[in-house]
Image (cartoon, rainbow, N blue to C red; front, side):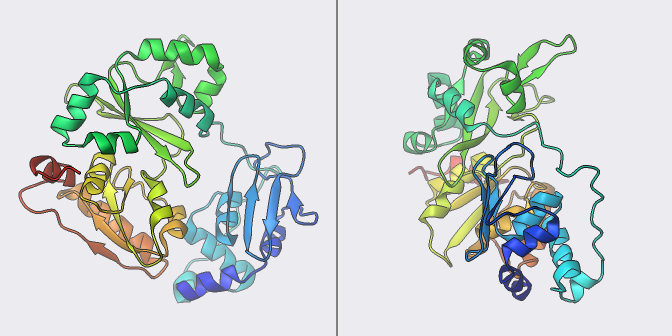
Amino acid sequence: MNDIISKIKELSILEVAQRLGIEVKGKKALCYTGHDKNPSLNFDDKKGLFNCFGCDEGGDQIRLVQSYLKISFKEALRWFYQEFQIHNSSLQKRSFTKPVKVAKLPEENLFVPNSEIYEYLLSKLTLSDKGREYLCKSRNFSDKILEELNIKDIPYPHSVFEDLKENWSIESLLNCGLCKKDPQGNAKFIWWDHVIIFPFLNLNHRIIYIQARRLNFKTSEAKYLNLLGVKPSLYNLTILAHLSDGEKIYLCEGVPDTISAIGLNLKAIGVLGANNFNYEYLDLLSNFQICAIPDMDNGGEIFLKNLRIAFDTIGKTVQLIKIPKPYKDLNEYFSKKDNRS
C-alpha cells in the first residue's frame, strides 16, 4: 500500500486537478466549493500540494480527489487506479465509478467550522468552581492540564447565547453548529444547562470544533453534546507539532480518556467515538507508531477493529495498549490512581 501512495505522490497535482475537471490557469483555479469569484485555489506542483486561501481546504493529490469527489480514502485510491493505472490486486477487485455531476461545482456544505466565533465564545468563558470540582475531583485532572487545554464551562447558557446573538448573526451561529431552530422557527442555543466546554484546535492552533459535557443529566439523556452538522475533528491535534517521525502516538476513545493519557505523559490524540475515525486522518498520522487505548467493552473492540482496518490501508499496524483490570476505561484507571501531573 505504501508503494501505491508513493506512486500517487509522484504524479503532477496539476494533472490530477485537470483530470478531475478543475480549470487550472497557471497554478491557480477557482475553488471547486464555489465560495469565491477570484481564483483562491493554489497548486504547488513541486511539493504535490494544493491549498485554498478562502476555505482553508488543502492537502496532497489523494486529499484533492477525496475533497472534490466527496469520496473516501479507499475510493480515491480506486479513482487513481482507473485514471492512472496505479493499483494492486486489492484495488482491482472493485471498479470505481465517477459520480455524475449535475452541476459544474459540488454543492457547498452549509455547516462549516467558524474559528472566529468559537474563539470569541471561549474568550468570554471561565471555569466555575463547580466545573473545576467536577474535573479535578471526579476526573482527577490537574489545574495545569485544564489550563493548557483551555477547558472552560458554561453554567448559564442563556446569557452566553444572548451575547453571541449581539455579536453574530443567527445565520452564522446556525452554520457553525452553535444553534438550531425550534418548530416555531425560533433560534435556540444547542446547550441549555451547565456544560463543560472542550475546544478542539487544528495544527495552526485555531479552534475548529467544540464538544460539551453536561454536568446535570438523567441516565437516559445525552451526556456529551456535539456541534450540529459540523464534522468532528481529532482532539489534541496540536501534539503532532511536538513529535518526531517514528515516535509513538496514542489514540484514545473520547476526550476524558485523551486528557487522562496526557496526564500520564503520553502523546495522545482523541477520536470521538468507536466509529468516527476518518480516513483523511491517515496522512497526518502516517509517520508515527500507532498505539490504541480502547475502552474495555464492545465499543472498545469496535474502535480497535476500525483503527486496524484504516491503518492497514497504508501498511501500518496498530499496537493495543490494554487498560489494567478491573478498570473499564483509561479515565477510570487514571481517576482512581495518584497519577495527576
